[in-house]
Amino acid sequence: MSAREAAPPAKPMSWAMLSRALAIPLILALVCFLPAVVAAQPGDGARDAAYWLQLVLTCYAGARLATMILSTRRRLLQGVFWMFVYIAMGVAPFTQLVLGRTPTPLVGPRADLVTAVALVLVGCAAFDLGALLASRRPLRARPAPRPGRGPAVAHPVRLRVLVVLAFAASGYYVVKLGGPAVFFSSRQEISASVAASGVVSGQSNVGSAFLKGFGTVPALLALLFFTRRLVTSRRARRSPSTVLVWAGLVALNVVVNNPFSNARYWFLTVLVSLLFTAFPSSAAMYRSVLAVGVVGALVLFPYADRFRYDSDGYRPVESSSVFEPLAAKDYDQTVMFANAITWVDGRGHGYGRQLAGSALFFVPRSVWEGKPEDTGVRVGQWMGMTMTNLSAPLWAEIWVDFGAPGMAGAFALIGYAAARTDRRYARAVSRAGPGPGGVLAVAVPFVAGYTFILLRGPLLQAAGKPAVAALCLLLVMSLRAPGGRDGRPRRGAAVRPRSGARSGPP
Image (cartoon, rainbow, N blue to C red; front, side, top):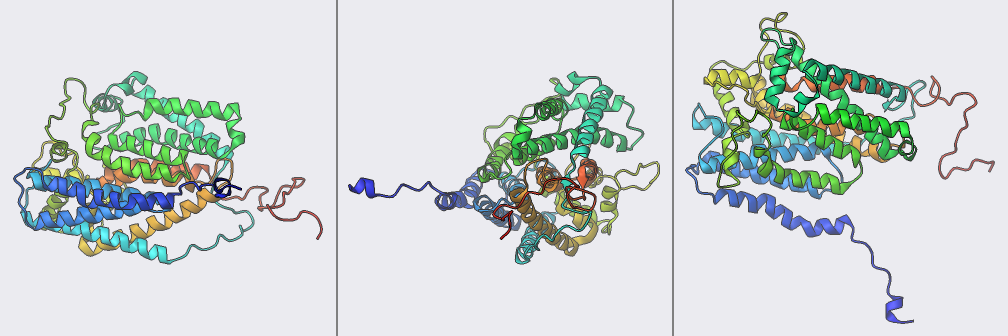
């Protein structure tokens, strides 16, 4: 036998081997190369405490993002969190400090900007601490379902009801705004159509929030459920009715959830949740979303508002550097946090008032006269800005009400919940069989995509669609185990033995 014939077959390269090869270049790119390139840009920024703290935050977030990308486990919520921090709270504000320009003016002292960057670091460290505590606590083994109960699954009948609701609500939304053509014009045209529809009364935007929420969210969730059904069930892929419903939902989402008539952050939610649902076990897709997302957010995102205004109101970004748009628009989270600190210094903390207004967003102002406005709007009015549609990152939202201790505690809880949810999601995806699958397998991708909006804020603007999503998930959720009412198979139903179990006598 020749040496060639005796040689064992070559093993395919595993992700573990590939990750070791990519680890050093990826970490160097995120932690060292990109911050160094930003620091080398010509600008008028001062190299003070805010500069060095921001550099530390950028490198820290880059290291954590690299860890998420290189991890052998898919951590959707944690991965998206660190991607947002690295981009919106790291690279972008670091660029602004280097160039000496910010999208929104800093009205307070420079010391408040130093405090804001330090508090963002504290929040990130608390998030990591919460995630670490969650990893130390093992997930409990899933107990046997009690009679009449079982895991939360998408009940097929209620899933059909969700599809009917999606078509009805989106159809009403389209008709109310003047037809499908409006949805392919601009966001400015959509806003004008909503104002002309009569759902906005006075200063209350509750009617507009519910109109947009029910017009877009049920259609997206129904598409996610049917996408998961097609991915996990060969029988569903062979069913013409299931494929036809899925195609109809795709067409419906093209109308109501396209990038022309929706905010960029919402379209990111649609895109990210759909990718994570269509590829539930693909580590390559998960890592591609995080890695490509960084490049897209830094290079393409500032130019992606082409359809915010009509052709007369659109002003394209003109710059000679890829970094200048980061200081001109969009990424105002850190400087708005600093302005919020200055604002609170003159009025005191709210002790839950602002967050209560966000949680009770559905209460109209005619009923609650003193209902708080968006945190970004309140700070913008105090600043004397004519355009008050400004961001209020989650760090600022919590700090405005509860100060530094409350913010640190809240982010520790958020990190703990995100890590536990990621682990439960991984288990649900690996154990889910054919059919619609567990609600968690659809809810987590949706929340992961919407995390961009929640972290950017303001929460009052962001609260409407998650509330509609929660109602839709409750609609399709069934706590009854498959089979009869008591969790046992229906009478006369065949019972299949488990894989590896003997069906006959010993």
